[in-house]
Length: 250
Ligand SMILES: [Zn+2]
Ligand SMILES: [Zn+2]
Image (cartoon, rainbow, N blue to C red; front, side):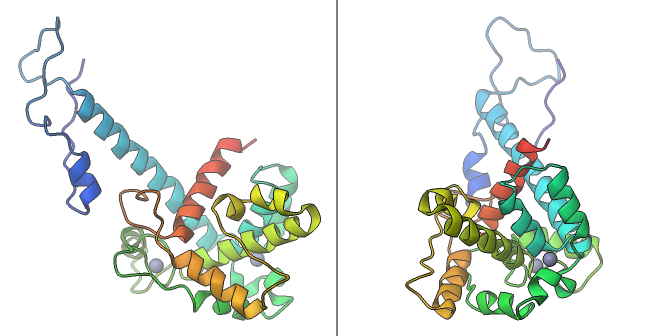
């Protein structure tokens, strides 16, 4: 057995500190097994902590890979819209539709049909993050990932701006269309329905609904940390969506 590689705890947040096992320095030797010189046995706490670190690393990689694709090759609004229309299932029809989509929201014919990116602005202006939320206000992605990507691209400004709002806007348009056709029960199965977002089209003005949607995106995600950080409902929903898509890929 190879001795486990020491994993250094980051000091970025309370979650890391609290999940670092107290026995990291002197793990116990399992009964009946001889410990070789220089070899340390992992405690169950250490195992769990390493597994959690690995899980976060995989989640971060999947999230960044998809965001990179959406920043460079595929309009994020169309991706969100098509994701919901095809219920997250990646088949040939959806792939064809995605191939026809432009590579940015500024050239998107689906958005241009109404009043283009101005629609997104009407939601985006209501997305406010409280100080403790570790999210970039331009793109809506976790700050440390946005920072890493800027360094990777040698860019001074955010390279994912608008992405989170554009994806969620697409998911919302398709979810509301599905609700119109199938009612509340169908809506509850949509990505936003499952994330707890509700919208009453009949009872409220478009302006109020856009405001409510923007505010919901910026709210703190309270069911836990997102890859070790305090995040918003917006980025939490997108991470769940990306992870779910990989599960159902056919
Ligand atoms: Zn588009
Ligand atoms: Zn950013």
